[in-house]
Amino acid sequence: MKKPGAIVVITIGLLVAAGCSRQDTDRAKSESREAQDKAQRQLEETKAKLRQELKHADDQTRQDLDKARDQVRHALSQSERDAEHARDKLREREDEREKDQSDKDDSHR
Image 1 (cartoon, rainbow, N blue to C red):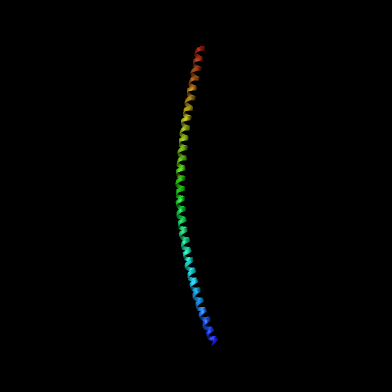
Image 2: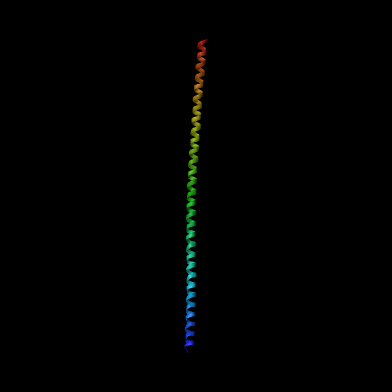
């Protein structure tokens, strides 16, 4: 009689172990899915933040380039005005020299 009782106990033990194993497997799968979902949400949040930061950086770069472009235009314009002013002064000096030379020539005659 001990043999059939032992067989029953072993059978019940195997069934309980199989049930626990299935529950553990189901719990592990569920936890794995939850972890995967959480990781996916974090990834989406990170991607959204990164896109926002890149958009901000792009806007800032665009503004900086616009400022630099305006500064270059202003410097070029100022340089052109300075060059024109220098040319005018040179013309005035040349005209004065020619006039002085002409006056000297007239006084020698």
